[in-house]
Image (tube, rainbow, N blue to C red; front, side):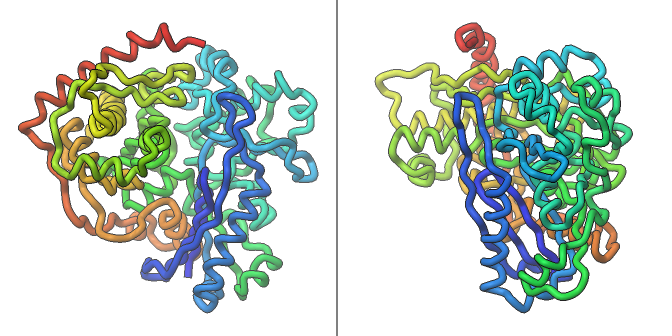
Length: 485
């Protein structure tokens, strides 16, 4: 048996698979986010351990015999979080999360140093780890002076599981300290933030062993024998391993809290000015590009909170059949935007409202706004040398056929739906645990799932969608001067 642990923003998911990759069971532990000030987003690392204990306890209650047979564990996690430890491995402050934008001034200052884009292949985004450390140095110097280790969230879990300070390439590529082409820490970039390599975890590939489960935890969970903990992956790379998006040209669209358009690459293809992320993949000698929007289902959840109707009720009012855009446009920049604008201060808007604008019209505009933000990502990926012929849809938003038809039509590519099953980050992490424990061929293990169906672009609506997208594109420069803080 192999265990995947996925540390998300809203919870930890534990998934158990067997040697044939059949899912035996899964369980969850919940997490909350603390937002003490506007633009701040934090979690206590101790809560990650509690949520992991809850999730594993749920698996143990349902599948004690199977859990006892675990031989490999893979880790996946929310990226970019700054988990700061002292020399005794004590947590110095709450972890600053991926969607925290307080360090936008520090990010801009680091990004102005040309070495960062040259070596990392990426813009220094406010959500990345390096500018957070620059912020801590400036605003919490006493804490900065005590920092012995900087760990990413899943790697803090690894420390608890194994006692090892280790990380892997895909997650570390989101720190702004990795030489992404060479797959190693850059001492030059670390020095630019007054840190050095001794404060960074040791790097391995995601498929390699990165510690063994501590005996105390193994006995608590009823596991006998050695358990290898794999390097693992950042959440999007782990989802790609779960979806089989590991070979050049494969792509997926994820409609989760944030939205992601992800393409696997056989070589390193950076184009930072496009705000496309060029990161290491979890498999050796592979990279990936992705465009990221900060609010996907989050935009629908916001609309749900305002209208007092559940997301399912709202999308249900639209039906499954795609309609032409109504003329109402929604910009989904509720917490800023990453690709292609790299703008932490921009905010969302409805444009084109009239007396006839019903709740259903607003819902349609919200879905289309996210769709057009993903189309922006496609254009950015194209500019960075990646052409996508089709995508597989994952994430909670992929339950809406209307939304998927909208995405297929706006992107002009077929959208595949995986056969029933859970192929997300926890499954990808379990696959990495299997590879690390058995030495199996990574590409063979990370095969794509069967396709249950395909949603083709609605060609009769292509023109209307193109016009609506052009309206959407024109709005960002129009509202930008009005959003500045």
